Image (cartoon, rainbow, N blue to C red):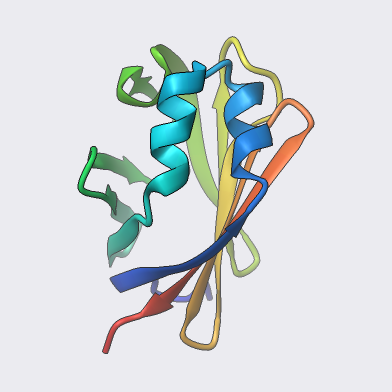
Length: 135
């Protein structure tokens, strides 16, 4: 049974964000701003229905979906694109595949104790972020 990810998570650390943003062809000015952000995550997980919010002073992004159901995701707020997205469970990892202009695009979330891990991929770039659950 997959874990329930419901909770509020504060940013702890990240690695390789610059390479990930370059793989998405995000312009230099926006990359510099994003590098300064320390986003939080808020997840509401009710059965197969999930709402994942990425919250920052600059820009918020909300992704609402049913696990296992493909949908069109509007990523214009992130990088100006739309893609076909599906989120599934692979054992205890929540895995997202985003099909569109950028190959190998997606992410995976998983818990280790009170830490939420996020691995973002685009082309051959991998960015890792860690968040700590707020009690």
